[in-house]
Image (cartoon, rainbow, N blue to C red; front, side, top):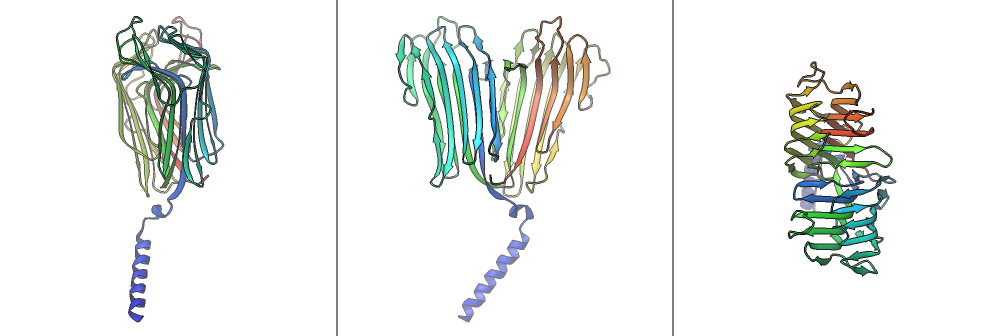
Length: 419
């Protein structure tokens, strides 16, 4: 008995010394329930080429917070021969034990009437209870869905594939899910068209059309903080309400809630007649997380940018943003690495590549131009290398309320606290 007691005392002593040597940050890690949710109305793309970006897109990012409720809307969507819709309404929200997302699209018409519906609605919910994590698409539905003259009186079973003669296929009520003991996610795409053959409408082979997308997730983790962040090359909107998306977020990448390997997205260029053209866009996102540290790093690099008939030009633009912490309470932010190469603003010879952060210029007869705009809050940093707000009637015919962004990177951290 004495020998056993001595061994026990030795083990206790070793354990005490180990605990004293542990980094303080490790002891401050705590388990958190992390919510995620996003939704959009429509998306049209060919590989990495954006035809029409995600409409009425809205996202929670990654957050442990409950009682969040966000909505977005656009009046309509129109891509010649491909898709037209009425109003698009999206919503994401959290409650203490669930994350929810929905996308509701009115009067959808695809492929010049081959597919039509009075309403297409996607719903995704991820929840936690005493038995674990769960996902549900309850509430997802079609109203008066017609495909090639065939009416569907009820919502088809998940992942129903229908052949579209002369075009390819459409997946109805597409559901992509994963549920484990520590994470769960569900993506619902109510219509997902794949154009696989040459067709009478001239729509490129490889085109994909998604209508009504909703995604929700929950992740259980032990970490000092959870991550968020994104980067995109270009984005053009007309403020409302409702918000109208002229060109969606190009080459969009996101940082995962609990980190991710380096993600890279590249598109060959963006062109919006009279407003914006670019060369290659490359965006990156990296999330690193452990029990003692967390960091989010994003970047957007845009080549050969030209805004509003050479009002602003640059050979290369790079936005960089980072956020890090070791204790989940004190956050460090940086925009180092953000830069211009051969930046020129017509009528402003004083502007050079070394333009100071948050430079603001009034452009007569057009609006307000921001260069190297840095927006920082308690848990987020966003870098908008070029932002142009059109607030005057102008000779270019660009609508008042138009917002143009080029090279945007943001990084966020959220304290890992239980709801």
